[in-house]
Structures are given as structure tokens and as C-alpha cells.
Length: 128
Image 1 (tube, helix red, strand yellow):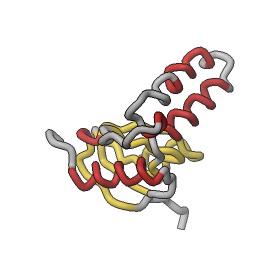
Image 2 (cartoon, rainbow, N blue to C red; image 1 turned 90 degrees about the horizontal axis):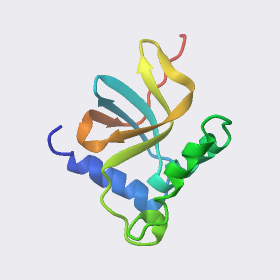
Image 3 (cartoon, rainbow, N blue to C red; image 1 turned 180 degrees about the vertical axis):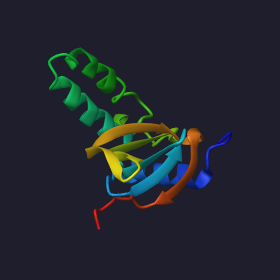
């Protein structure tokens, strides 16, 4: 998209302001279908940082995700919620054929301006 979908921006802003991780969303971006739940950016960053910290090889990169959290004007910094530019998915999967990758869900960051299509709710497959 050349201009971000205003309704999707409003949805992302609501997730940020409510600090909720319950909004399920499916998006099409760059030819991929990503489905999962949205998280506020600060929550997403904290979780990614935790995963990296627990990794022997990737631990040094954890600070990249925590340094920005306390900046004034960010939701975590106590200021007003800024207009989101990205969606932050957790327990999310990239759908391919009849399966989701990874099966347990991953952490994805998607630029709102790059979303071609979206729908509320997440998709899952069954063997039936």
C-alpha cells in the first residue's frame, strides 16, 4: 500500500492504548499470510528481548529491543501513544499450504504501509 489503511492504523492504536494482547488479526504482506494476535510494541519488544537473553549466542542482541522502551512519547515511556507504523504479532504463524510456520507461533513485526489485505481474526488449519 502506498498509504497505510486508516482503519488498520486505528486498530493498532487501540491495541497500543489498551495494552491488550487479545486482538486476533490476519494480514497479507509481501505475498505472505500472517495470522496471530497483536501486542503493544513495548510488550512485543520485552518478549523478544527475553527470548534473545535466554539464548547463549543471541543474548548480546537483547539490548536492541529494550533500549527504546523508555523513550518519552512511547507508550512504555508514559507519554501519549504515538501513531503506530508497525503491527507487532505474537503467537503468530506464516500460513503456507495446510500448515502454519512455526507451529508454536512466532514474533513478527509488519509495516502497516506494507499490508495489502487484512481481516479480523486468525486462521488455523485442522486435519479434518
